Length: 484
Image (tube, rainbow, N blue to C red; front, side):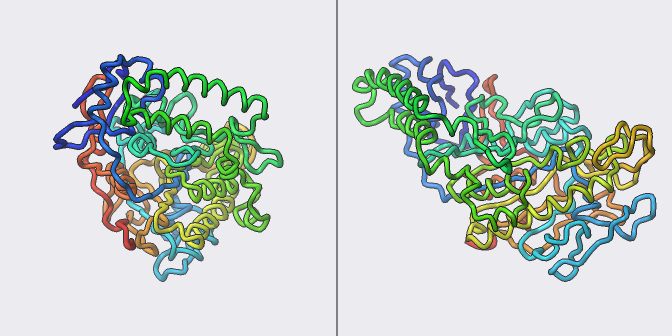
């Protein structure tokens, strides 16, 4: 395996058994200006000689909705109304439009479209803390300790790294309210791949009357100045073009230049982020709130060609503590679920229906997940403060604690067979008793959908160590593509 000189942090995909070990032209794009500034002329010649043509790849995409803090599986997709009273919450299970499938009564809209999604009820891992649980699911790190920063890149960054060729002005990976932190812990990120593979981040509330994506809505004077500055830099690099690239070895840098310019100047790129372009009826269908409009933006972005989109459900719509971490000390788990569930129900059901009605279901896979489930046995403790879904300080209220041993996920689109439940937990919701699934299986399923050969793709760490992007995992067969 080769390493790019003067760019020691750069990990690189290297298919096992590669004959040439060559560098595809897309690596010029991945290196960016930092990489070129550290290369000698002879090294550029070497890279040019090793360049391969990029392979054709059918387009596929993933939207991941992340429930930061870990939603209760018992109050969402795996209700246990017959469990003993110390486990059973106040909400009933309701029938869906698929005979035999029941979900929580808090999700009536989703119950009417169960034919358009699949539920996985048997995800289990060993990450008991929010950082460890997040890192296990998103990056495959098997460590049970809570790290301040990830040691492995998350699947989003890996996919971005491997699929960074873009046509047009849109980024390949966009985070609408990013999945990135839990308190002072970083729970996702590119790790040794470097900051070039972080997402384009959209912050703020898309439901606000005046909402702008940072970096896109700049005035014309600033736009012209930035364009001129970048053009001048390009001209300086062009001065060595005749020496190193008669056949076009710097085409990838040109593509990077065009992409950055398009993002700043293209009305089409700006429009993809602009949910105000949608009819009021559509905006109302998703819900005129932050989560609903985040999902609507995700649909607009994937329809415009973005391939990796994450959006996090947290903040005031979650209740007093702003996440799904429903310990009794934080908030009343049942009041919190009743408060937030209708918002999730409306936003996710609208997104699923849109994915299918607009013909996106063949290539766009939607995943709704959090880092773990919640403890089936109800805990009780004193509230630490009053607020939405929480009684005054000192009041004893119910909660559910961290529970990595059982978690539920929702999958829609992606050409998969829907209208099914995969796996099962015991009568209390404590342990999987059918079709045990782990983080490696989840990651392998995502990569399979993105047509990334996870079994042969290796990344090189800062220390030069080849590392597989999936360890101890295989795709979930029940979520295989059922249509072309």
